[in-house]
Amino acid sequence: MHNVTNAGDSDEGKRATEGSTRAPQPKDEEFPVMPTADEAAAQRPGANAPKLVHYSFWLWIGTGVFAVFGAGLAFTAKEAMIEQAVNRNRNARVTPEQIADGANTLLWSLLIGSLILAALYALFGYKAREGTRSARTTLAVLTVITVLFQFFFGSIIGLFSALLAVVALVLLFMPSTRDYFPRPNRL
Image (cartoon, rainbow, N blue to C red; front, side, top):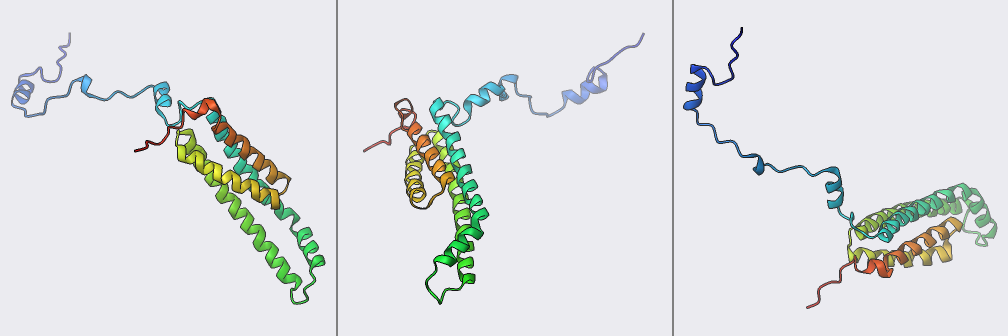
């Protein structure tokens, strides 16, 4: 039969632990407890947002995607756009190469602008989902700019993107979502 000893049971172990200056171990209650997955999900920003605010967030993402898609799709019509501009040109000092360069600059500017707009929609849509009132206001301003731009210069895809922005904005201002955006404290 084997005698099993635990650490500290021997005479040497007892002497080593009696004179030890180790700090006392904290009790289990002092250690933080990790939340469960459901508890962590409930604590993340925007988790308690009304459903309409969540729908609005995804519509903002869709608005950005369609804006970028529409700007990218404009590159497929570049040659026709240049040809039409050359045919309409009545100024002899403007060459077809200058028109082509201008069209290229315009298309790249539209693509970069739509990428920036999509990033702003995603950022402020996320902040609105967290309940930030100023994000909702910023999205309203961006929507007005988008609708005006698409009305005068847009394509069908751009107009659809503007329609998504209007719907997403209306969802943020519905009566069931107003209480989610706290009013600023007035002095």
